[in-house]
Length: 191
Image 1 (cartoon, helix red, strand yellow):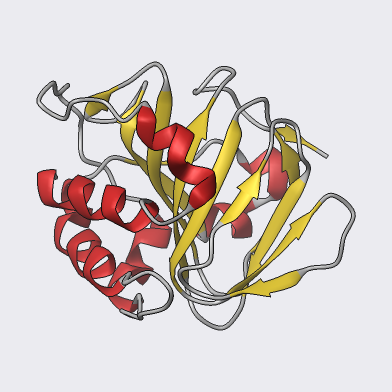
Image 2 (tube, rainbow, N blue to C red; image 1 turned 60 degrees about the vertical axis):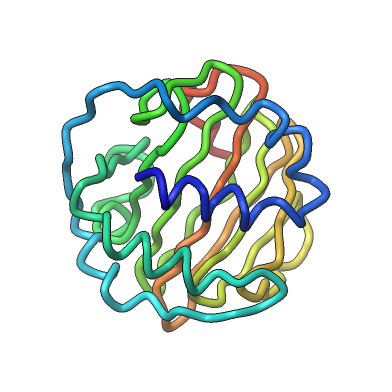
């Protein structure tokens, strides 16, 4: 986990929108026990493509693949929210935050996974958020704007309560995330 955290922090370092989040990066010496758990979307982890872009995400992908079985994979939603097909292709794991192995009440950091062909409908939350795709090209939407293809290594910033959605293409999507402000464990408001 230490190596993964080091690589994640390094990946976000050149992203201007991530600077305030990184200023609150906790000391990684404190740890909490987590229970490893998997989800159906985790079957796609070996398929994640190690790519390089503006940020060298290949090393992050390789490290994530190495430690994925030791992580606690979760879902925020239930079948009543977006349906069973969405749940088979959606999950996340928190590295830092209220639920991750490194405790923090100031930021949350982890990874989102979407299987190919998954649409994550429009939602919003109090927390400010920065995503950094590390594998798989996906389309992202902010507000009522058009979906725009975002390549690996290009950050996406969502200010507090900004509606946003994403959809994966023919490859699985892995995107690192940073959250701060608001309740770091709050469920998003579905729009």
